Image (tube, rainbow, N blue to C red; front, side, top):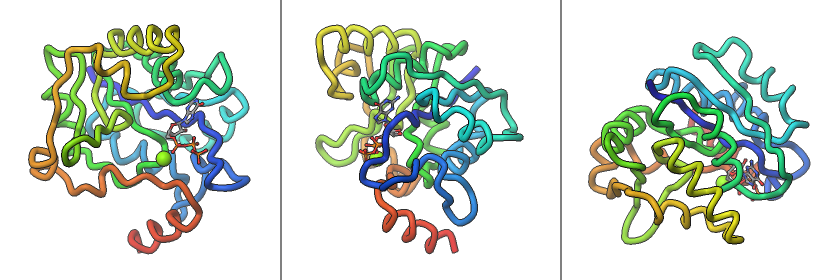
Length: 203
Ligand SMILES: Nc1nc2c(ncn2[C@@H]2O[C@H](COP(=O)(O)OP(=O)(O)OP(=O)(O)O)[C@@H](O)[C@H]2O)c(=O)[nH]1
Ligand SMILES: [Mg+2]
């Protein structure tokens, strides 16, 4: 069994007043687009957010074709690492694909490959070029990564890459990524201008 986890608890400060998770991308809420992109390669979905986002996110995901759970942040403003931890704690499957809510071009063929590559290990994480890890587009053994995030947070770390380095992880390098997906899979939307450009591409 495979679960998808979408972290959506950020404040979208670069985006403006609106919550980008539910902003319309060519008529579809961004988080819904991300969820739909992965639905064919997961059995269940967990969405992490702040409590005040829950109603809007539920509405955006109404009728989703996989069982869906919302995992609300308990501590506020702890950052994306806490979001990953909270999301993964709600996962029942051994492995979960974690994605940010702002990656509308994520490619399910790569997600499927990441699940394959993580088997028997704690994580499979893409890396583009020489150093650019993609921890919010990676597959984790849910319990191991949640524990690693908890330990990193307890040490005061908020660098999202720190917990990964304590795990038994596989790097999926750029050449391997390109066998399955274009690098658009990692594109994330941070501003209204980026959203508008993405909508144009979706035509
Ligand atoms: N649960 C949780 N998720 C977060 C937090 N901060 C960021 N995220 C999520 O992490 C992902 C990537 O973060 P960003 O692209 O920086 O999103 P953001 O923080 O909402 O936006 P900015 O304020 O413009 O940086 C997004 O899916 C966010 O929803 C947080 O404090 N808690
Ligand atoms: Mg982003």
